[in-house]
Length: 439
Ligand SMILES: NC(=O)c1ccc[n+]([C@@H]2O[C@H](COP(=O)([O-])OP(=O)(O)OC[C@H]3O[C@@H](n4cnc5c(N)ncnc54)[C@H](O)[C@@H]3O)[C@@H](O)[C@H]2O)c1
Image (cartoon, rainbow, N blue to C red; front, side, top):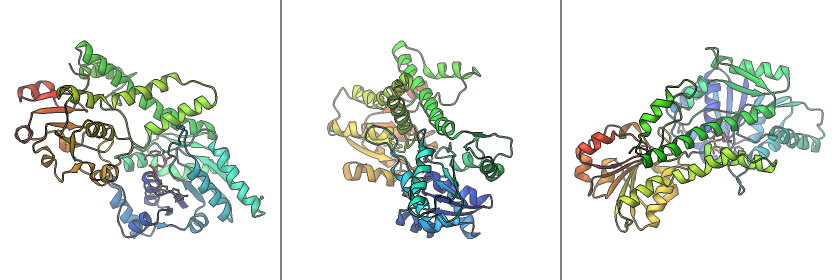
């Protein structure tokens, strides 16, 4: 099938590459000329395990190409996937300016039947807005009879595991009101659901809502466990035991009940906010979700509060080492990362920060510029530091050389925002060790 993906970010690049890998003829288009140039030069602009190899193979086999030319992209694909960003607007609602701009561009350039597939995360009702924006442009061109279909196909991939998630999804959700188009969408996705995972065809509004409901529920699980973890600490219970005790209940399960420094990333914070906004715009108060967001904002400050207490409120002039900056391991994405809140608070209190992350140093430099120091190696960050703060649980931090850490730090203080280390062993090793929800 001929496919164009408009917007070549995390989702667009993975989507286009995986469709090419299953034999389709794909153009990935983006307005960011430097990004497209880098891709044409064989450079992958994001860190995503396994992506580089797939992109290179499909470019070589001429199933995947990159372009900044929207006209070419619209003419090429029978299916036009919209995968541009939907960042939060000032009031928290999803800003649809990029999505609707693409819709207008499609209306300006299409000359034959197109299936316009919205893969960006968008509020309920966006399908109608996309249809209207395309139609308005066709009207200007006297092409009101030119047919097109609008489909909602939300994406559920996780950064850091995006290829696997796309290639082997738990389900594919397709909001589509035309039987023929639904069959084509099923054909496109058939190679990815060979283990009988479902392709769920539904109306467009339900598909749009499904994406928000999924992210909202996952965010709820995280805030719930963080809330319980904080109470465990007060009561002298251990969240690790509690987590195992509840996770073994098949109705609850183990995933997304690890306590930590709060959720971040490009999706949960903005999607929770957007759904809250949708509720309030329609006079419905989403009370659970409101608390989920409040709990998360508070949780992002928990590591700092532990540090402040351990330093008796005086951080001035002291250096603090941070391990892990990205919002989670296996990505370089720093959007809404808990590390940002922690670092800003340390700096505001007069402390200094020396940071290390295996992949996110470039992104961190965009955020902090020269306000913090950057280490090329993990242990380098520790030299003469007052404490080590572990914010992101990259694998390389799981079994470090604790003797070396102790020698390098000025004070054997570790604040572990991901409960990576064993409390009892850390005590035996002579560390002052603080983690989340463990007495
Ligand atoms: N990142 C994730 O893990 C993830 C997962 C599921 C869903 N989503 C959703 O997918 C959408 C895209 O997210 P992302 O993380 O890939 O965003 P991103 O910011 O990484 O990429 C968006 C791209 O769109 C491009 N763009 C903007 N306007 C354009 C236009 N008019 N024409 C062509 N390109 C244009 C930008 O230059 C950018 O490269 C969002 O709605 C997001 O919520 C993201």
